[in-house]
Each structure stands twice: as structure tokens, then as C-alpha cells.
Length: 123
Length: 476
Ligand SMILES: C[S@@+](CC[C@H](N)C(=O)[O-])C[C@H]1O[C@@H](n2cnc3c(N)ncnc32)[C@H](O)[C@@H]1O
Image 1 (tube, protein in one colour):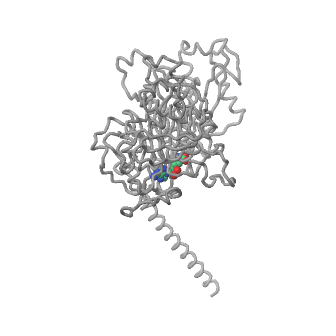
Image 2 (tube, protein in one colour):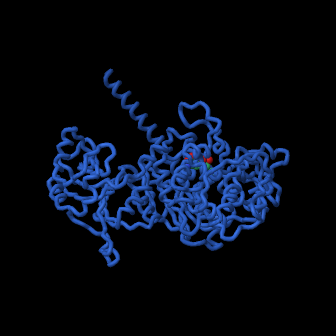
Image 3 (tube, helix red, strand yellow):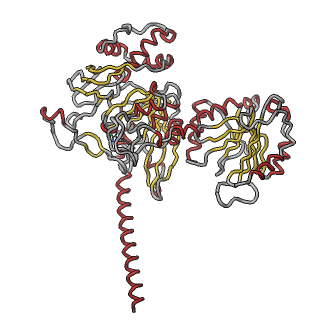
């Protein structure tokens, strides 16, 4: 699971959960896979991202290179975009858990695939 | 020949010089042609007008403002075979030559110079000719003022001569219905269909979509470089494979854990076990598109986990119809049921029926929320042909139906490829319950199957009875 995906997920659909965001991450196995850098794509994603959440999630799994805030004029800042690219798209949580911030419900991640399947009493 | 202009030239059109082109299509999925080309014209903001209203032929005669548009269109179209700048077309061979001789030399000039190698291809659609006959046809063009050398392998310019004998094989007419001559400009993406063949795909499932239809879907969704694409019923990811080819960044969800982990029973007849590394991701890797693979999640579509304000550019999907796979979601009918804590680690959630009408209701509501305005939902919808009217289709006030093409599956059933475009953000009310009455395809499907089974049984019984009587008669 990539941190870009993590940024877009909430457990709000669960019974009794009001915000469910952000999900905490427990990472047991992290892999980095180098992928092609597409600066336009990264720049397009930045306004869609909750930056504070991305920054916090990155730190929680040991990625400490990201500035606390989005820099001005980021579209033209290749160095910044590369850092964001790395954190969003190259860091992959292979094994671990996502955890609902309100109920503590754990969603296992294995083989890089989060399992968000709820039980029949949670929907 | 009658020429129908679909638009009379207005002042802005008059300032451009429109050029005539022949668009030759594959004679496959004919109903999807318009939907694909219209989507691409909208994607690239291209103008095109018909010189003649298309009928059943595998070609259109059209005009474009310039060659740039033709090439853009061909760079993405899977239904197009070839685009040809039309120098002459006529109802018979003799008239064609007369017309070609009138084609202005000034327009030929760039392609007939001494430094331009060329070849002429002879194509006889739906009728076979010997090599000798083809050479004779070719030699009839010896009056063309071409100065360059012939090069059959890598010519600078390719001319095409086409005789069209209709679309019914085995009994072509003596003379062609229509003949064409022109300069080849671009080919469509027929090659890509082969490259993405399911036969050589790393990971497939029982309901993987063939590459041609998958690519058509990505085109109808107007996927382009950097598009965010979701398939909420992703299965083996065949629709996402197509979307990445056009620049889409893709996510998928599926309720089936074993499917996403590549552990279901193999789908190929001769394969005993699946490879350890079969997955949607492995498919992306196979086609060098791993950088556009975002994630897949095990997730019941009835309870999506996406942040409310996350917007996709396209949702492309083939929902379960319940014929070849179950339509289920997590849930229970028991009141106040709770999974006991000691059972949690190994508990497999109970499933309840997820009827077609609820699936489509959820899909349209989801798309009304999670598409950006202007974004598209492209999905299949099963129908009974005899019951079909536009009224049976799912609808939503914020989604406009922009195309609707049919692929017949059997005498009685077909599926329709629907393309919706989001026109505005929904109000809170519109996101809540709203009625869509969709007939459950399966109820009738199984009823009809029952009927036919019963009919067949009766027919077989009658044949047996007839045989018995005949034998009795013989004996007596
Ligand atoms: C027609 S198949 C799609 C096949 C896919 N296009 C492919 O390339 O393999 C429908 C898929 O929907 C999944 N599905 C069924 N019910 C679901 C649900 N409630 N939520 C999410 N996925 C579901 C099935 O597991 C199946 O993989």
C-alpha cells in the first residue's frame, strides 16, 4: 500500500465511526520500488492530498525527508516534487496494519494489499 | 454521388481548408464505433464532419481541418484500422481513374517528388484476387506523376487503392460497390489488442475482459495522461491494464480476497496451479506500467473506504451480474448479531444477496460523488433484449448518459456499455436514497433458463416418442 492511497482512505463507513481519518499505520515490512518520475502527476496530486496527514504517516513509518508544509511554487520545484514522488509512490507497505482511529479496528495488509473487509456486525 | 454535409460551412469553417479522409474500421463491435470516436473527439477537442452519412460499410468518408486531428484520433482508436487522405472515390473503377486524374497536382506535390520513395497497396475488401490480377490493377495507375523510387519495405509515402465488395464473404458481387484511392496517413491501435492478449497475460480470471473491449472502455472514459482511474469490481484488473496504456493511474477494489492475492483456481484449462506471483500488479509489470499502478484493496463496494472529497477522473467497471460469479456483500439478516471476540481472528464475514438493482444504485451514487465534474463512469449493464428500452437503464440526476452501445450475448440477452458524464456536484439529498427501479436481470435469466430447459426436455421426450411410434409402425 502506498502512502498516496493511505491519504485517501477513511473508516467512516463503519458502524459508529464519525470521521475515521486518518487511519494509523503499523508497518512490519516496507519496500521501496523505484518508479518513473512524472512531475506533472505529482504536482496534480498535491492539492488533493491532506498534507498534514501525509507528513504524519510518512514520519510514522520512518520517512523523515518531507517538509512540514507544502512549499510555495511547488510546480517548478523539482527537488521538492521528487521527494513527494518518493513518499507517495515509491514507498510501499507490504506487511502491516491499518488501524481505525476511533474503534481501534485493525485492517491487515499483506502482500501490499490492505484488507478492508468488515464483518457483518460492523456494517 | 450524393454528398451530404452534416454542417453547412459557416464563416469560421470557411477560413480553414477541410480535407477529405477515409476512415477504415475493423468490422467488429460495430455498435461501439460512434461511441469511441465521439469520446476521442471530445477528449482531443477535434472537429470532424461527415461527407456522407455512414451506413453499414466498414468505412466513413469524413473531413478534418488538418492532418493533425486525424493522427491524434488514430493514436488512440482501437476500432480504426487505417486513415487515408482521400484523393479519389467513385462507384466504379473507370470513374475512379477519371476522378484521380483531376486531383490537383499542387496537392500531390509534396508526396510525388523525386526524393520520396513510395509504394501502392492494393486492397480488395471481401474478394480474393491473384497476385497477377492485383499487379494489373496496380499498373492501371501508371499515369500518376510520381517521380520517386518504389520501396516496398520502408516507403516514405504509401498509397492505397481499395476496391470494396461489401461485407458478406463468400458471395462478393462481380464489380466493386465503391473504389478509393488515397494516401495512407495513420493506423489505429489494432496491434495493441494483440499485445495485450489474455492468452499471454500473466494473471487472468474467469471474467477477465478482452483487450479490445477494455481499450474501448478506457477511450470512452476519456482516460489520458495522469487520469485517476478506479475499477471498484477489479477482479484480475483487465480494465485497468487498458487504462494504464493511455496514461491512467489506477486503483481497484474487489470483495474477493483470494482473487486479489492470485489464489483462486486457475482460469486456464491447462494450468494446474497459479504462479506464486500472479496479481493485478504483476500484470502492470508485464506491460511496463508498474509506475501507474497505485493499489488494490480487498473491499466490499457496499462499504467503500474512500475519503468523501476524493475525486476520480474515471470509474471503469464490469460489475457482477451473478451469472458467472456471485453478487454478494457483507451483511447479515440477524438482528443485533455480534462476532464473538475469540472468533474474530479467523472469522469469515457472512454475506447477503447484493441485488443488481442495489449494485447499480450504489455505483451511480458513488460516481455522482467521487467523479470530478466532467469525469466519466463507463460500465456494462445486462439486459433482456425484448424488455429493453432506455427506461430500464440506471440513472442519476448528476450523471448524463453520453453513450449506450449493445453487445449481444445470446438470442435473448445482451449487455450494454454505458458511458455517463458527471455534470455537477450532487446535493445532499441526491446522495441519499433515491429510487432507481432496475429489473433484476437474474430473476428472469434463471426463469428463462428454466423454461428452455423444460422446453428442451419436452422436445426430447417428443422425439423419443416419435421414434418409438416409427419403430412400432415398422414392426407391424
Ligand atoms: C465481472 S467481474 C469483473 C472482472 C474484471 N473486469 C477482471 O478483469 O477480472 C466482477 C468482480 O466483482 C467482484 N465483486 C462481487 N461482489 C462484490 C462486492 N460486493 N464488492 C466488490 N467487488 C465485488 C467479484 O469478485 C468479481 O471479481
